[in-house]
Image (cartoon, rainbow, N blue to C red; front, side, top):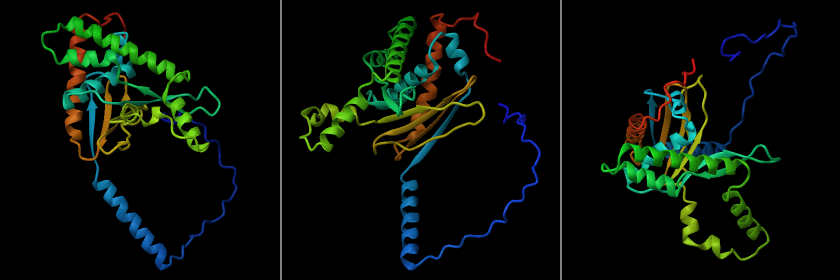
Amino acid sequence: KSLFNNKINHSKPNGTKLVQPTELRFELNDSIKRSIQKAQLQFRELVDKHETSVLYFSQYGKDFIKSCKLSPDAYVQMAIQLAYYKMHGVSRPTYESSQTRKYAYGRTETTRSVSVDSIEWVKSMQNPSIESSKKSELLKKAISSHSKYMADAVEGKGVDRHLLGLKLLASELKIETPKLFKNPAYSMSCHWNVSTSQITSEYYDNWGWGEVCPDGYGIPYMIKEKSIHFCVASQHLHSNRLTHFLQESLEEMKSILIQSNQVDVNLKPKL
Protein backbone atom coordinates (compact mmCIF):
# COMPACT_ATOMS: atom_id res chain seq x y z
CA LYS A 1 0.00 0.00 0.00
CA SER A 2 2.88 2.36 0.73
CA LEU A 3 4.22 1.82 -2.76
CA PHE A 4 0.77 2.24 -4.26
CA ASN A 5 0.23 5.52 -2.38
CA ASN A 6 3.72 6.77 -3.27
CA LYS A 7 4.72 7.02 0.39
CA ILE A 8 7.98 5.06 0.31
CA ASN A 9 11.01 7.11 1.31
CA HIS A 10 13.52 6.57 -1.47
CA SER A 11 16.07 8.87 0.27
CA LYS A 12 18.28 11.34 -1.55
CA PRO A 13 20.76 10.29 -4.25
CA ASN A 14 24.21 9.75 -2.74
CA GLY A 15 26.00 11.09 -5.78
CA THR A 16 27.57 7.78 -6.78
CA LYS A 17 28.13 7.71 -10.51
CA LEU A 18 27.00 4.60 -12.32
CA VAL A 19 29.14 3.05 -15.00
CA GLN A 20 27.81 3.92 -18.43
CA PRO A 21 26.17 0.78 -19.86
CA THR A 22 27.48 -0.66 -23.09
CA GLU A 23 25.55 -2.69 -25.59
CA LEU A 24 26.24 -6.41 -25.46
CA ARG A 25 26.18 -7.74 -29.00
CA PHE A 26 25.68 -11.43 -29.67
CA GLU A 27 27.35 -13.15 -32.55
CA LEU A 28 24.87 -15.58 -34.06
CA ASN A 29 25.92 -18.36 -36.37
CA ASP A 30 23.54 -20.10 -38.77
CA SER A 31 22.82 -22.92 -36.31
CA ILE A 32 21.71 -20.51 -33.56
CA LYS A 33 19.60 -18.53 -36.03
CA ARG A 34 17.82 -21.71 -37.10
CA SER A 35 17.19 -22.60 -33.45
CA ILE A 36 15.70 -19.16 -32.80
CA GLN A 37 13.43 -19.45 -35.82
CA LYS A 38 12.33 -22.91 -34.68
CA ALA A 39 11.58 -21.61 -31.16
CA GLN A 40 9.56 -18.72 -32.60
CA LEU A 41 7.54 -21.12 -34.73
CA GLN A 42 6.89 -23.47 -31.80
CA PHE A 43 5.82 -20.56 -29.62
CA ARG A 44 3.43 -19.31 -32.29
CA GLU A 45 1.93 -22.78 -32.67
CA LEU A 46 1.48 -23.04 -28.90
CA VAL A 47 -0.28 -19.68 -28.76
CA ASP A 48 -2.55 -20.58 -31.69
CA LYS A 49 -3.62 -23.79 -29.95
CA HIS A 50 -5.12 -21.82 -27.09
CA GLU A 51 -7.93 -19.46 -26.28
CA THR A 52 -8.72 -17.42 -23.19
CA SER A 53 -11.91 -15.95 -21.82
CA VAL A 54 -11.94 -13.39 -19.03
CA LEU A 55 -14.84 -12.82 -16.64
CA TYR A 56 -14.98 -9.68 -14.52
CA PHE A 57 -17.89 -10.45 -12.20
CA SER A 58 -18.86 -7.18 -10.53
CA GLN A 59 -22.18 -8.02 -8.85
CA TYR A 60 -20.45 -8.89 -5.58
CA GLY A 61 -17.19 -10.12 -4.10
CA LYS A 62 -15.88 -11.38 -0.79
CA ASP A 63 -18.00 -8.76 1.01
CA PHE A 64 -21.23 -10.61 0.22
CA ILE A 65 -19.70 -14.06 0.72
CA LYS A 66 -18.43 -13.13 4.18
CA SER A 67 -21.84 -11.70 5.05
CA CYS A 68 -23.08 -15.26 4.61
CA LYS A 69 -20.31 -16.46 6.96
CA LEU A 70 -18.75 -18.58 4.23
CA SER A 71 -15.17 -19.04 3.05
CA PRO A 72 -14.66 -16.89 -0.09
CA ASP A 73 -12.16 -19.32 -1.62
CA ALA A 74 -14.27 -22.43 -1.02
CA TYR A 75 -17.31 -20.52 -2.30
CA VAL A 76 -15.61 -19.71 -5.60
CA GLN A 77 -14.36 -23.28 -5.89
CA MET A 78 -17.98 -24.44 -5.67
CA ALA A 79 -18.93 -21.89 -8.33
CA ILE A 80 -16.31 -23.49 -10.59
CA GLN A 81 -17.74 -26.93 -9.84
CA LEU A 82 -21.26 -25.82 -10.70
CA ALA A 83 -20.16 -24.06 -13.89
CA TYR A 84 -18.27 -27.13 -15.10
CA TYR A 85 -21.22 -29.38 -14.29
CA LYS A 86 -23.61 -27.09 -16.14
CA MET A 87 -21.39 -27.24 -19.22
CA HIS A 88 -20.32 -30.89 -19.21
CA GLY A 89 -22.95 -32.68 -17.11
CA VAL A 90 -20.32 -34.35 -14.93
CA SER A 91 -17.81 -33.50 -12.20
CA ARG A 92 -14.16 -34.19 -13.01
CA PRO A 93 -10.87 -33.99 -11.08
CA THR A 94 -10.15 -30.43 -10.00
CA TYR A 95 -6.84 -29.23 -8.62
CA GLU A 96 -6.39 -26.29 -6.28
CA SER A 97 -2.92 -25.39 -5.08
CA SER A 98 -2.50 -25.21 -1.29
CA GLN A 99 0.65 -23.93 0.40
CA THR A 100 2.83 -26.00 2.75
CA ARG A 101 5.43 -23.26 3.29
CA LYS A 102 5.11 -23.58 7.07
CA TYR A 103 7.38 -26.63 6.74
CA ALA A 104 11.05 -26.64 5.77
CA TYR A 105 11.29 -27.08 1.98
CA GLY A 106 7.50 -27.12 1.82
CA ARG A 107 5.91 -25.86 -1.37
CA THR A 108 2.45 -27.08 -2.34
CA GLU A 109 -0.08 -29.83 -1.79
CA THR A 110 -3.17 -30.64 -3.81
CA THR A 111 -6.59 -29.68 -2.57
CA ARG A 112 -9.13 -31.78 -4.43
CA SER A 113 -12.23 -29.68 -5.02
CA VAL A 114 -14.55 -32.49 -6.08
CA SER A 115 -16.14 -34.26 -3.13
CA VAL A 116 -19.22 -36.32 -2.37
CA ASP A 117 -20.75 -33.15 -0.94
CA SER A 118 -19.87 -30.95 -3.92
CA ILE A 119 -21.42 -33.46 -6.34
CA GLU A 120 -24.59 -33.69 -4.27
CA TRP A 121 -24.86 -29.90 -4.27
CA VAL A 122 -24.25 -29.30 -8.00
CA LYS A 123 -26.82 -31.95 -8.85
CA SER A 124 -29.34 -30.30 -6.54
CA MET A 125 -28.80 -26.98 -8.32
CA GLN A 126 -29.97 -28.58 -11.56
CA ASN A 127 -33.14 -29.91 -9.95
CA PRO A 128 -35.94 -27.30 -9.91
CA SER A 129 -38.03 -29.40 -7.51
CA ILE A 130 -35.52 -28.90 -4.67
CA GLU A 131 -36.19 -25.90 -2.43
CA SER A 132 -33.67 -23.07 -2.16
CA SER A 133 -33.30 -23.76 1.57
CA LYS A 134 -32.14 -27.31 0.83
CA LYS A 135 -29.80 -26.14 -1.93
CA SER A 136 -28.34 -23.56 0.44
CA GLU A 137 -27.85 -26.22 3.10
CA LEU A 138 -26.04 -28.48 0.63
CA LEU A 139 -23.88 -25.57 -0.56
CA LYS A 140 -22.76 -24.81 2.98
CA LYS A 141 -21.97 -28.48 3.52
CA ALA A 142 -19.91 -28.62 0.30
CA ILE A 143 -18.03 -25.45 1.27
CA SER A 144 -17.32 -26.89 4.72
CA SER A 145 -15.92 -30.08 3.17
CA HIS A 146 -13.67 -28.09 0.86
CA SER A 147 -12.41 -25.89 3.69
CA LYS A 148 -11.62 -28.98 5.77
CA TYR A 149 -9.66 -30.54 2.91
CA MET A 150 -7.73 -27.31 2.37
CA ALA A 151 -6.90 -27.05 6.08
CA ASP A 152 -5.65 -30.64 6.11
CA ALA A 153 -3.57 -30.10 2.96
CA VAL A 154 -1.89 -27.02 4.46
CA GLU A 155 -1.00 -29.12 7.51
CA GLY A 156 0.71 -31.69 5.29
CA LYS A 157 -2.16 -34.16 5.55
CA GLY A 158 -2.95 -34.32 1.85
CA VAL A 159 -2.53 -37.48 -0.21
CA ASP A 160 -1.08 -36.39 -3.55
CA ARG A 161 2.46 -35.37 -2.58
CA HIS A 162 2.77 -38.45 -0.36
CA LEU A 163 1.75 -40.78 -3.18
CA LEU A 164 3.95 -38.92 -5.66
CA GLY A 165 6.90 -39.36 -3.31
CA LEU A 166 6.31 -43.11 -3.10
CA LYS A 167 5.99 -43.37 -6.87
CA LEU A 168 9.24 -41.47 -7.46
CA LEU A 169 11.06 -43.52 -4.81
CA ALA A 170 10.01 -46.75 -6.51
CA SER A 171 11.43 -45.44 -9.77
CA GLU A 172 14.63 -44.19 -8.14
CA LEU A 173 15.19 -47.50 -6.34
CA LYS A 174 14.33 -49.41 -9.53
CA ILE A 175 11.45 -51.17 -7.78
CA GLU A 176 8.57 -52.44 -9.88
CA THR A 177 5.86 -49.80 -9.99
CA PRO A 178 3.27 -50.68 -7.30
CA LYS A 179 -0.10 -51.82 -8.62
CA LEU A 180 -1.82 -48.78 -7.11
CA PHE A 181 -0.13 -46.49 -9.62
CA LYS A 182 -1.15 -48.73 -12.53
CA ASN A 183 -4.80 -48.68 -11.54
CA PRO A 184 -6.95 -46.77 -14.06
CA ALA A 185 -8.82 -45.12 -11.19
CA TYR A 186 -5.57 -43.61 -9.90
CA SER A 187 -4.63 -42.31 -13.34
CA MET A 188 -8.09 -40.85 -13.81
CA SER A 189 -7.99 -39.15 -10.41
CA CYS A 190 -4.76 -37.37 -11.37
CA HIS A 191 -5.97 -36.21 -14.77
CA TRP A 192 -6.67 -32.61 -13.87
CA ASN A 193 -9.49 -31.50 -16.13
CA VAL A 194 -9.66 -28.32 -14.08
CA SER A 195 -6.55 -26.66 -12.64
CA THR A 196 -7.17 -23.70 -10.34
CA SER A 197 -5.42 -21.32 -7.99
CA GLN A 198 -6.13 -17.98 -6.34
CA ILE A 199 -3.90 -14.93 -6.07
CA THR A 200 -5.79 -11.82 -5.05
CA SER A 201 -4.83 -8.17 -4.98
CA GLU A 202 -6.93 -5.03 -5.12
CA TYR A 203 -4.19 -3.42 -7.22
CA TYR A 204 -4.24 -5.49 -10.39
CA ASP A 205 -6.97 -7.14 -12.38
CA ASN A 206 -6.00 -10.56 -13.66
CA TRP A 207 -3.42 -13.24 -14.29
CA GLY A 208 -3.41 -16.68 -15.84
CA TRP A 209 -1.85 -19.83 -17.21
CA GLY A 210 -2.77 -22.68 -19.51
CA GLU A 211 -4.42 -26.02 -18.87
CA VAL A 212 -2.40 -28.97 -17.52
CA CYS A 213 -3.96 -31.57 -19.83
CA PRO A 214 -5.19 -31.16 -23.43
CA ASP A 215 -8.85 -31.70 -22.52
CA GLY A 216 -8.77 -29.43 -19.49
CA TYR A 217 -9.02 -25.82 -18.37
CA GLY A 218 -6.71 -23.51 -16.48
CA ILE A 219 -8.77 -21.29 -14.17
CA PRO A 220 -6.90 -18.75 -12.05
CA TYR A 221 -9.10 -16.34 -10.13
CA MET A 222 -9.10 -13.31 -7.85
CA ILE A 223 -11.64 -12.60 -5.10
CA LYS A 224 -11.77 -8.88 -4.43
CA GLU A 225 -14.00 -7.03 -1.99
CA LYS A 226 -16.55 -6.07 -4.63
CA SER A 227 -15.77 -8.35 -7.57
CA ILE A 228 -14.50 -11.76 -8.65
CA HIS A 229 -12.20 -12.22 -11.65
CA PHE A 230 -11.52 -15.33 -13.74
CA CYS A 231 -9.22 -16.01 -16.68
CA VAL A 232 -10.17 -19.32 -18.31
CA ALA A 233 -7.71 -20.89 -20.75
CA SER A 234 -8.04 -24.05 -22.82
CA GLN A 235 -7.18 -25.60 -26.15
CA HIS A 236 -10.30 -24.24 -27.84
CA LEU A 237 -12.77 -26.00 -25.52
CA HIS A 238 -15.25 -23.11 -25.60
CA SER A 239 -13.72 -21.18 -22.71
CA ASN A 240 -16.26 -18.40 -23.27
CA ARG A 241 -19.10 -20.82 -22.50
CA LEU A 242 -17.44 -21.75 -19.23
CA THR A 243 -17.13 -18.11 -18.19
CA HIS A 244 -20.82 -17.71 -19.07
CA PHE A 245 -21.68 -20.56 -16.72
CA LEU A 246 -19.38 -19.14 -14.04
CA GLN A 247 -21.39 -15.92 -14.07
CA GLU A 248 -24.65 -17.84 -14.07
CA SER A 249 -23.47 -19.99 -11.16
CA LEU A 250 -22.41 -17.02 -9.03
CA GLU A 251 -25.78 -15.37 -9.63
CA GLU A 252 -27.69 -18.52 -8.69
CA MET A 253 -25.61 -19.07 -5.56
CA LYS A 254 -26.39 -15.58 -4.30
CA SER A 255 -30.05 -16.08 -5.12
CA ILE A 256 -30.47 -19.27 -3.07
CA LEU A 257 -28.60 -17.76 -0.11
CA ILE A 258 -30.81 -14.67 -0.08
CA GLN A 259 -33.97 -16.73 -0.47
CA SER A 260 -32.82 -18.90 2.44
CA ASN A 261 -32.09 -15.86 4.65
CA GLN A 262 -28.41 -16.79 4.95
CA VAL A 263 -27.13 -13.21 4.66
CA ASP A 264 -26.08 -11.48 7.89
CA VAL A 265 -27.56 -8.02 7.37
CA ASN A 266 -25.79 -6.76 10.51
CA LEU A 267 -22.34 -7.50 9.08
CA LYS A 268 -20.92 -4.18 7.98
CA PRO A 269 -19.20 -4.22 4.59
CA LYS A 270 -15.49 -3.46 4.56
CA LEU A 271 -14.77 0.04 3.29
